[in-house]
Amino acid sequence: MSLTRKDVHVEITLIKGDDDLTGTMLIDRDSRLSDALNNSRKHFIVLSDYNGIHHILNKRHIVKAVEIESLELEPNKTE
Image 1 (spheres, one colour):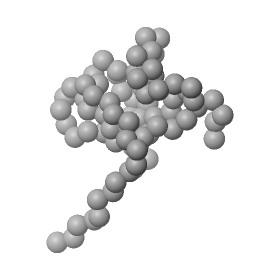
Image 2: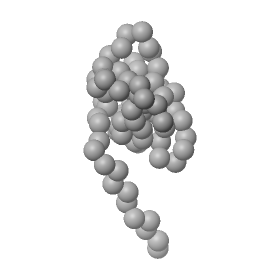
Image 3: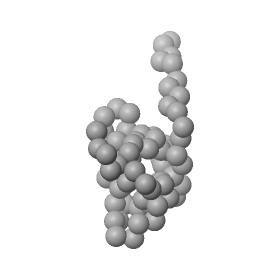
Image 4: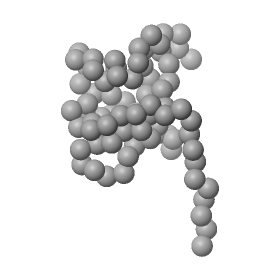
């Protein structure tokens, strides 16, 4: 656990239009998600999805990023 950073739950849409990525980003504790995305000194962000996979994303490929309050998991459907 870090005292200077916080986890933010996000949903990110990329240019290529595949499924949205959902997971957590680590940002400065006194920052907003928009501050982290608009930081011109950093060109990439790291998104940790809920399956434990880490994605390194070029910020120029992000179309939309939304902070989400809670994780809503769909129940497993069996046929």
